[in-house]
Length: 404
Image 1 (cartoon, rainbow, N blue to C red):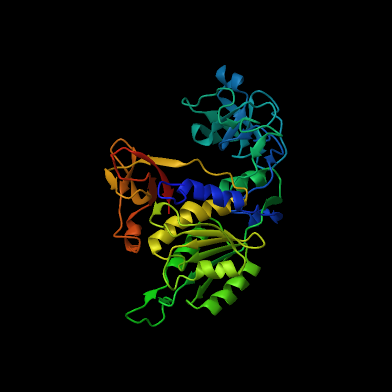
Image 2: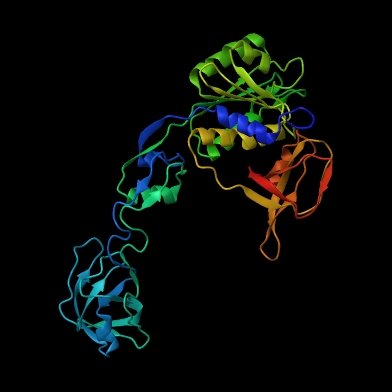
């Protein structure tokens, strides 16, 4: 706990992680696995490359013969990619080869096409051609050996990982089942984009930011709802969402005001409160609890900066961990200017990542005009977490970076 009796950000994150239910495993076609979390190890089906592979279009032959001075060679034929391996007929022969083809038997060197002249069925090496053993040949097994571990369970699957799995001959792969997520914003003041709006109302923007953040990070089963500040409506709709979703992400209604009804309604629905309020700024009112069937319920503060900070600091890592995703190494950067934290609370400071003349990265402070100033976030790349104050942290102070 912090000095003022509130749970610290680190303890809040630990409390969430320890209570999240692990997602089940499913087998999917490889084409459906981009962004998923791998739940089995992947091993090499064959050596990679599986044969001595021609790396450039040209001719293949015996390098020792060429180095002894024979520079004019009779062309025997063409070794195309995907064709069975040919065999060099004699030392004074050469075989035309295409990139990706297997190196013909009896050959140990490839001379690129731009370093030869071809005429009347003969290839002549130019003076600049170098014929050393295995020039322009991608040697068998140089990238990996058969049976070696290619990918470990917990890896998030991007394009490179999908290619590796395909190379291992796997048409289906075991991955984490994605949780069904519902994003719920509460409040009578919220109006959808495109709808008529009164002077005393605001646009419903938080939900769009939450959904965008989740989808940007590979979560695809994301729903969206808006509920007014009405107890019966909240009871009915939240009860429905708890029956149909594993994770609820609520925005608004968790502070201490008369119409902050969410904690009370969740309690009636049998949701166990794990904590309410964290020693941080912005985002102190954050709420977290577990439903009767293990549903994870995140109550994020309604101010837009607070919403986005809490989502990235707590919700995204928790869902990723529940899917078995190996966490990325923490990113840490020095701040590019002194910054004063007055309150005895952890401070989440928006920053822009900039580079100096030596290529060093700095987190340049981009403070907002308060937790409602979401317009200023467009000039930032994320936020750093600074320790509680009162203290002035100097330029060069290294802090953890969380990117939007």
